[in-house]
Length: 403
Image 1 (cartoon, rainbow, N blue to C red):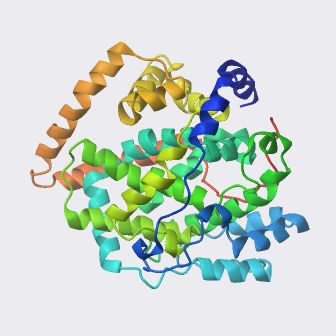
Image 2 (image 1 turned 135 degrees about the horizontal axis):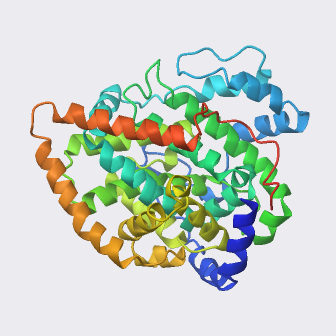
């Protein structure tokens, strides 16, 4: 990662900074909490809101030097219904007990419908989580810089595996059920975000480029949230994937619950797709921009398959699919070269694949067969990213040591 960092940061140049500065000038906050899942709220600009519950508790764990012991205990906490491990600091335990509770507005029926949607559309969801959400994250300046300069930037493959686990867990049949893992994944991720808020301002490298005093504000969390379900749904609509209204509402609900568990305040979680699109137009679209750090991260993502084929096949394909999914502007920002052969093949082949796959869904047993195949691919991807090891979301003790 250190070699990658030096190479990409030296070659991207300072021009990206000017573009990024213009694009990240966020408009004044005007989205009404009346459009949220709870229909009320203070309406505070989320740029100035972080996580008042988790931040001081996690900061105390970091300052006390208890992180290794806490991480060892957290490794044993794996399923939603599992009791928290004994030995955690009392305030951390209290925080986690509260954080693991599903919101009062959860709709179990919708969560069950979301499972059926994930099973039916798993192929498209996997592709969009990777090529739309994953690659888009490198064109979100706050997120790209937070990843690059924090501890996760030192081992990007491990960092990506943890993000992929969240995408995998939310689509699992028992995601929010007692034996599932989505609640655990979200709570641990929330703790990591709190740790990064405490640690990253101590990095002179991050401080030298940041336009915020503390990273991962509620607005930043909302931007990342919209890069996932909102962006995914827009892609599915653009690809003309047939989606029943009940399935669309259920998919949104699964991500509303996820946002709550990640620490996003309920007043910022949109109640409908109409509200989600309106909010995304205010918080996500205006901030998309290139950064030197984002270009470096995108370069790494495009090289993920290099261990398999040296990148001769996978890198051009991944780049072309990113361009097809996110469009020319973002692809050019990320300095992804055009691949005339692959660009045309994907432009023609992907819509044809969707039509063929949709025709196949009417055959008896096809949805189950599709799900089995998709699950094989998902598990294989996680195995590859984690290099065969269990994926463990843990508190960092510092920032990127390779910068």
